[in-house]
Image 1 (cartoon, rainbow, N blue to C red):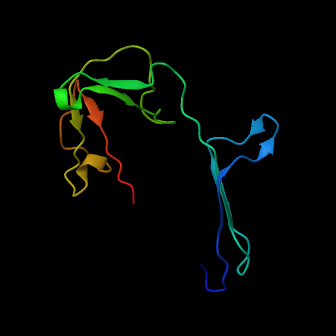
Image 2 (cartoon, rainbow, N blue to C red):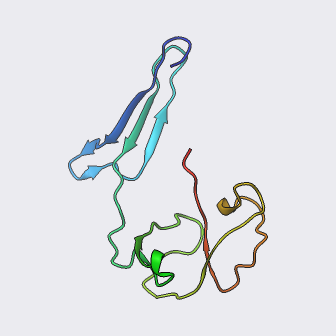
Length: 121
């Protein structure tokens, strides 16, 4: 809460819109002048429905199985239906949280699938 009691109105799973024109896969934040309440709208998010949005791990046995994946957005390669078979290796930039890959990578990922971890704060 702000110093003037201007707490945030947080609208989770906001399905605003008219008819079939519902806002999806987005969020916004309105910041009025001091003393007024800001508004955060977090809309409904849908999952990709493509049948190939699965990531299959063949081995080791304890990790084998299908995993859901999400597209990379506007960066990196996009998911296709063409199968790729390669070893997976975590990225490493040599820092404390090297598997996030925020710095220059120090490991060789040639011919491998790079796994980037994301921490949730």
